[in-house]
Amino acid sequence: MSGQEKHKTDVIIIGAGPVGLFAVFELGLLDLKAHVIDILGKPGGQCAELYPEKPIYDIPAWPVISGQELTDRLIEQIKPFSPTLHLGEMAAKLEKLESGHWKLTTDAGTEIEASVIVVAAGGGSFVPKKPPLTGIEAYENKSVFYAVRKIDPFRGKNILIAGGGDSALDWVLNLQPLAKSIALVHRRDEFRAAPDSVKRMRTLVAEGKIALHIAQLSALKGNNGQLAAVTVKSDAGAEHDIACDTLLPFYGLTMKLGPLADWGINLDRNLIPVDTEKFQTSTPGIFAIGDINTYPGKLKLILSGFHEAALMAQAAYSHIHAGKKARFQYTTSSSEIHEKLGVPD
Ligand SMILES: Cc1cc2nc3c(=O)[nH]c(=O)nc-3n(C[C@H](O)[C@H](O)[C@H](O)COP(=O)(O)OP(=O)(O)OC[C@H]3O[C@@H](n4cnc5c(N)ncnc54)[C@H](O)[C@@H]3O)c2cc1C
Image (tube, rainbow, N blue to C red; front, top):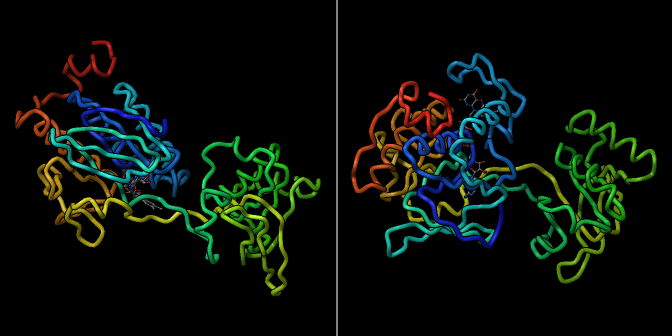
């Protein structure tokens, strides 16, 4: 889903990491509907982005599970509650409405109204690392892009892709059939991407279908945000221009707190202090769970975030229902819960 849409829901969860995803489940058990926003194009937060194939050994009842498998299981677990995921969008602006509800606007223009905000933003939003090139801002989102959201605008373009990881190589392989030309620039002739992608890229180079330059980006040439060429520099210091109309730098991602810092919530060194009964922030109606929060004894572990999600959901229910407590029920024995989960009694 993306852009220019208006929605109303009970709870907006910022962050589709493991903790944000599990929060959908705990809220769903209490009949609270959620929309989840993540700047990444896929759910799973750090688990899916930073270590999809690494084994995790401290998820209760899973002696070993990979970051991606944990994400897949969470997605399966929250399916009965049909959350709306807004992926590839950053939670940018938060306003309090006269009704007492919150209005959250994403950088794609999606507006969502809700009674409760749950910040499950981990270490902050993943943002691209930019190449240190003078004046690059003037070209951004015109002819320099840090992510490919839709393939079609790149059809027939002369594209320069920079980087040596999975994103760079995946896009070389995916865009090559439809681009007019593809040049790949990497600082050394070794690639961190999956061996199969590296092999396929090298075949395309050998067939003359893409050009590989072992060099570093050193300058951009163009006008009014439209790129005409990129100057690259080899290790030996030799410079040359590569004609292109599009630059896609894939230098990895870094985490930044981003717009959350401007929402008037008390912060403590880029973390959000919460109480350990409700996991509420200094602002009533805004909760914070997972790696983003801090309290005495906090452990930045997935299992801590799961516990926080369960208590937060009880508090969110009370907040939405004028102080009324949610009825405590076990998932094993409650037929009401079985109905919500779609399991036969
Ligand atoms: C290499 C590595 C190994 C690890 N191993 C373990 C382990 O063995 N066991 C364990 O328990 N933990 C482990 N961790 C830690 C674990 O991954 C984190 O505790 C967990 O991911 C926190 O989950 P979260 O949902 O709070 O945040 P995250 O996983 O960080 O997800 C937060 C999400 O919020 C999004 N976001 C933030 N701000 C915005 C915004 N403004 N708009 C839109 N989206 C936004 C981010 O893009 C991100 O996807 C490991 C971490 C790393 C890096």
